[in-house]
Image (tube, rainbow, N blue to C red; front, side, top):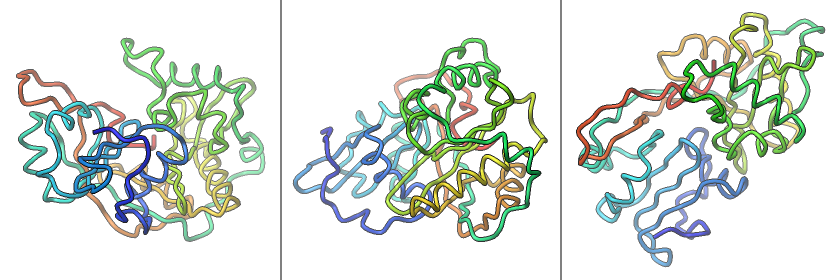
Length: 274
């Protein structure tokens, strides 16, 4: 059953970087939600927000019909959930991501570049809309929120969250770094840059601002990069992040077993930095 408050399971008392930040982000942002087999004596739990799904507990207590509703996104779960995921979906691509924690001074950027970066505010929603239209290559997705805004429910909420920083060239948002997941102790950073403004250190300047902003709010900045995304890993290291561990996720859209068609993986299902 769906629950409006996270059941008192004791499973999330220690917050680890990565997918472990998701439950606290749901509470903090009031976005996404939870499904529990029994809110009073929980043995299986699904936490979801944006494209992220976190599974915990006993797979035998999780209704496959409920699981099938959350196919578009990426699942983070212990290995014991793999048979259930395999029985539920026809298409789920495993991928490995490297988790980083901010530990060192970033590579410096020029003073002029750093001066273009500022926090986003509620009235930047229109600039975020235009940024998403330019960043989206597929015409049939025009008007959709940028994928890194999905854990905030869209551009308006992300812009007003206090956890987003952008590089502005005149009226145009050229690059953006934000708290993709913001928990009690950690802020997992996502970054995206308008294709016309890449390779100019704008992303690095935005990530530096996001990491500094996280520290000022008592949060440890973290980073998640697919193991195959060498550009994302290079940016993380330039920004002062160092790898601490790896975790495996299953990315979709995942189609329920009753369907026979296949769908290519969403470009925003895995990487969160471009």
